[in-house]
Length: 366
Image 1 (cartoon, rainbow, N blue to C red):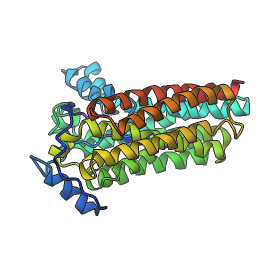
Image 2: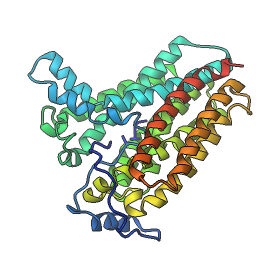
Image 3: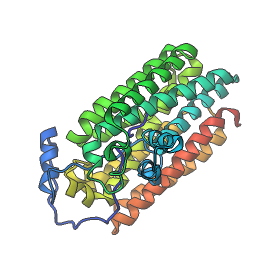
């Protein structure tokens, strides 16, 4: 489920890292304290900027929906379709659907049986539910998007699509998606979709991303839901592989987003958003990045000794995972935090692409 993560999404230009002479809180803070810390470092506080969707698949996809909407001029059918399509946040949507497909193919490979109709129903239904969540997130984030250069042209901000019509669109997508999942999948997939939707829209979108440094953790739960749904669509039960794939995507999102929070720390500080680098500082974020990277590698490689994938999978993902850990370790002594964080982020995209591909075929490899 998009989060974004998502992960709102980050749609701010990277202007580097602020000087290290800013004060960093050394003790845990309450949600109110998180907002106050961000506000103290803000030049325009208490303005809120968008918080990143941890589940977002590529930073380049952020802002794509606004561009689509801004180019959809006129009242033609094509322009109207483009504006509504932009509300689904295509970059976020397709990244999450990719992991759902990967989870399905892993389970199908383990079972040595592929049901084409079930695959189609799972992917289409999941896509519609995620799209519904993204549309509703656009509605909820209008106040944020209106202040962001790259998102102020979104259809819900510009008014080219009214709030009423956007909500109706979201409801239609949600109902259709769940109808498909109910009719052709199983109760686990349906419950996972509902839980992911609620977590992304309510727990993340309405609450934690604006109130707490832990918003990324909450958003990562919804971001890991699609791969779990894809897997249990085949098995109908929750086993070790279902849990490990969920954890792998959950853990992956943390270094992915925290890396962005490092090289865009000044943007978040000016906007008053309580991300980890603003509330606890860059050194604390680096430690969290390394720990979550290690956790991801363990969760991803653990599929092989448990018998779900072959050793070729373990070799490939293990090698990439060690490489990612090394980059994380280098960050502890990096002199240019900005450059290191960008490198860490770019490699996270390689990791998720490789992971989605390898678990799709991992059970079929020796």
